[in-house]
Image (cartoon, rainbow, N blue to C red; front, top):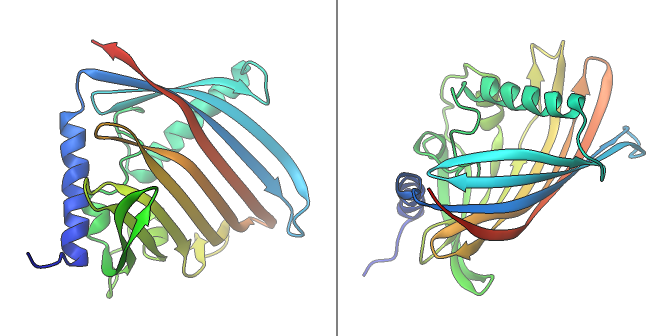
Length: 243
């Protein structure tokens, strides 16, 4: 059998993601996610540190998120409102899903996203004891029309995917920003750096989750420099029954 090309590998991964989304039905899963967000000044001095703990419930292609704690304490009404407002902002930025929790948040390789990039197969290697294809990606040239902020960001991203050779799930992804993105011509601000790495783990038969993610973002909001570092880690994965 002829070896697979990069495009064939990615297409199998996209198809796999769609099949998993369609098949997700009776079995429900739950896990916890701990996040840490650190805001620093331009010199790297810590300005703010916030830890949050979430309970995640997934069933039938839907992910439901409950905020459990903020900095070790029960969330206040203001914390819960901020969480709701943030979710609404993300939906608006990405195009506006009607249901806040209507998509599996770990399923990020969609046909629309894959169509924006060119892929190159680098090698096959072992990742977490499983064979994986290492595939690099960069934006297509010429770039597609840019209508939203997310389009301008996507058209400046490149990186590497590690795709499981047996199940064609994304096992790891590294993404970085190739050039600065201005917001409203630079008047509102700009995004100067985006570096993001996520590791996905096979936690059950056919079930993969984002288990560790690390982000590093630098930019400017009006006249203020921003430097935000994020980490998240999941634990306590278990089956919780069926409806």
